[in-house]
Image (tube, rainbow, N blue to C red; front, side):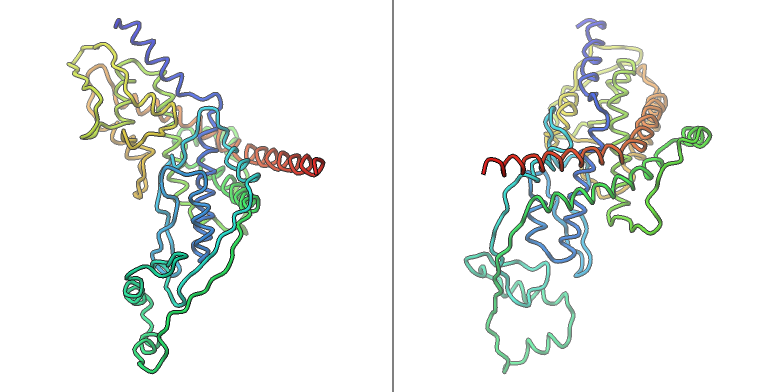
Length: 382
């Protein structure tokens, strides 16, 4: 492969990674975090059946359920960018469109009276084997001396009691709740995205007045996952900027950056890239290009430095610091690569912060209008 052809290959790959609307990734993430926020609320209020239904709706590639760390506190099980695998032509609001028109779901709930949260639940066939022992052990988390005394009293009835009731989930109502959460998150992100601006870009915004945007009111409570949302916004903006930078860097620098985006692991079958100082070998396309083009739907195959689950905050800063820490060589200036990413990221977050509230309002108006038109059409048919 000639150098000219190789350069065309990397330009084509990078162009394929750049969507026509660079806000789509932000709006997809906004939907994901709205789902996780609502699952948080439902789990925290002990509405586990509805929380599990929402967490599993549309079959995310990871678990969006919550882990209970106490009777009054839960935390997300997944902290990453790509819980759903969107097709190339899938709009960010298709999730809401689908839910608005879904049929109600009816199911039976059956649980053992006195079972603490976090203990196993019996299914419709009855309590599973070992359920009583596990439940007894789990009761210890309550640390209630009075309850322990009653359990040890041999004169009290010890028969198991179950409560059963029917529950109906109306997806359209869940979608409306998601839209309210999405609007709140959009207002928060419009403010929080500004914190990602580099010092120079922040100063320019302050001078030209573009930093004056509507922040959430002082009387509006922040969403419970706001700090995690800030971290994920930083990761998404950095990854989007890095992908866009692939088409603006030299061939060696683009190859270097693609390896940073998708670090090689032990079970990675990508070919090695032997490079000697001053040499520019024929370009070997990395599989990460195809992965990123499809919104990284096969992340189990290759690592993703910014999109994978990581409960430790600051992944975007660590990614950039790792690049800056590399030494200059092989026609690659890591500091210049990091600077290019930050410059592009500044442009992205300015646009996102100014547009996210309006985009979300327009999307929700469209979803509600389509749902109303569908209802009117159905009424006319009947």
